[in-house]
Length: 365
Image (cartoon, rainbow, N blue to C red; front, side):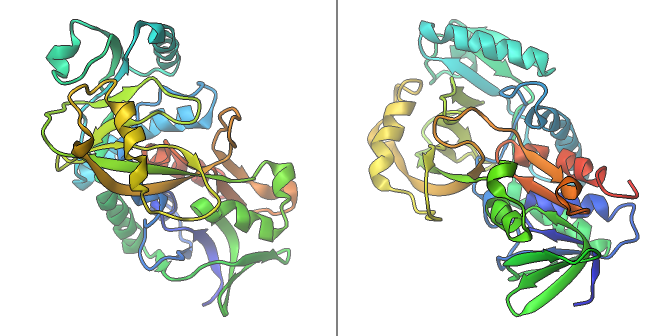
């Protein structure tokens, strides 16, 4: 392969969105290198497929700013590119009065972030969700769901139609900088590029380290966190996504649905040391106990294992939330190399805004 102007590592929704954005107004040779045999096979396809409103994160975080911006961009993109989606809204609930203070804090954070929400009283809950029990809640009308597979395919088609080359089954093992080009080792092949965008998801931190970046000093240590999902029998008519008050590790075992109406519970949050995507059926009891607080008609036999995903978390167990890392590495001696590390939720919602943000960091923007 001849030297490219830009190489993007990773053909998940983030890498593909960046490729589509960069190919719009640039006369550059752009390649996407993907280790799997299809695009969007890991984080992009193993999640709740939620279009988040952007309420959980401090307003000065990229997670907040890019989520709020990305939400609007994503809804527009869905309309103009016929991506299946549904703006169903989210009900964030307190199951007991002692959780009121946490709801109040989240309401205030949503207000600071410019996210539309309104209080829902206990008396109003049955009119919105007859099968849900809650002492009160917050309604976020801008939250929705999306067909992530269709989004991935659309972004891939958009990029490819403008000359971006997607190379599948091409795992990047290491990277070197010679002062003019980055040389990427992919099996027996060596690929060169003037600029590199590392959107390798769960492998992004490892790849940055092969370049010579001190992961400890840079704060690029990854803590993979597995989230399992259980599906439910479709004997309820749920109108909104239903989230409990979040825990210190995750947004909690929430109730969501795909565009076919299939209900699911999850994700859980378990720090791991491997890449095991199996769902442990013995975890069913924990899911049942978490969900029956707000879905009192639930029975254990209503649940069955569905799928699992792995989040590329930057914070370890018990540590405070970390922001997205989107860093151009000239300050570390690697000009034109951009690392995207720790892009977990709300990465799907933020993908188009992330793409614009990355494009603004490159010469010629």
